Length: 114
Image 1: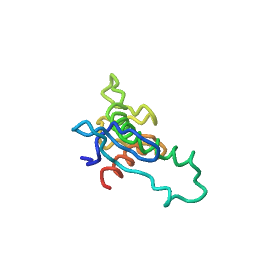
Image 2: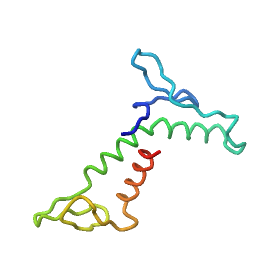
Image 3: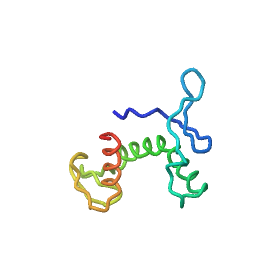
Image 4: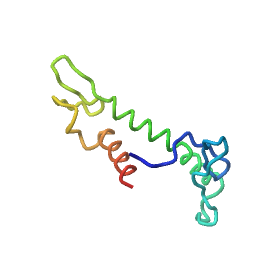
């Protein structure tokens, strides 16, 4: 189970926060401009902050995506809705190497394993 600060997260400039249990803002993370390369202008820094802000929603969507991508067919076969590989069980599913399912599983594993 992932131990990140639960979403939704909000943003004020380069600071990411969530509403704490007490109703006050609770700090999640922030981008320190002094550590950012000179070539990252303010627009790029704010775009990075927006991406971080929406990370919990992206993580939840990725997990939901993995829960619902099989298509059950009449001949008792599961079919990946992306790479169209069929298998009799939804586990240990062989996917094509460019399948988004493999990439989504990899992202979830990286987040969970740190």
